[in-house]
Image (cartoon, rainbow, N blue to C red; front, side):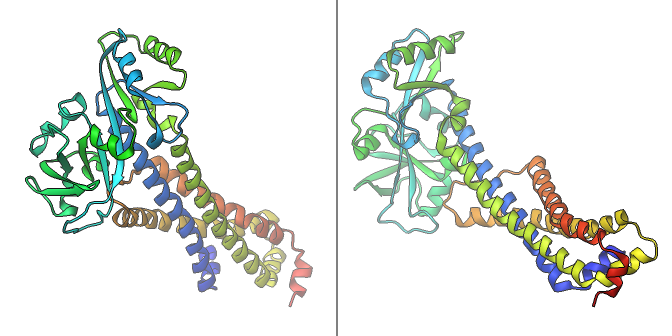
Length: 369
């Protein structure tokens, strides 16, 4: 009760300290939830293709610029371990001539070969049919709703008009918010000939993935064969996202920690005579130390709990206003880490003021005006 009473003496100051912690913890939760959601979405996107391996250009650390040429694809198809190779491309495009009902000013367009294995999975959950030529397009359900278009409609992209032959539904947000056209369309738009961004490799039953990797990389040193589930760990850009998230979070929590430090320093300064009285009536240095630390920890605990709630709300709000296709992902570990950071901030922010208070001489403190 004494801890709470002391903090309520300066309610505005205490509230601002709690707010500082809340903002810092909310930043950790929100940015990490969106970042983890994006990585999880990419993991699912590639795993659900059913391909065991991906072949990419190791010289390009951004998947948007990776290129696997036609002769390279032909060589890979001929390897004894390979049952099937599917080429994939992607780009962004701006729809035109439509009633835009949502945030669909830019559309993620996937290039796939008509009749190819990569396209077949969409047959299970769609209205209409899959594309059969380069004049047709399939649109994700979320994108179709945002564009105000359906099966049988027309969609303008890349300076041409496509007929919408199917509206598919996917459990992956990036696919749901995108569209699929023939690879040749994206290749022409990007001016890359018959190259693809990456080759999805379906291995023969019992084939050795290690032998396949050695064969590809020995013949083409600039290419790299990676397991599908390794994609999000391979590209540096995704690692940069993690670092960016941590830097933003660190700045936020440092500001929150300084708020606790300032509050506790001023509190100790204003209560010098009170602390001297406590020491004079028998309080030990350790007890005074624990009192001030408890006040800092209470501020951080309240701010931490509020930050968890604010972080979830902030992440979901960010998703609403961000380009469609993003998602969030929470975990008990994320909440535990964020709350742990809040408690640590409270401890560190209150440590010096608590030590300073415990070192006060009762006689000198009682003389303090």
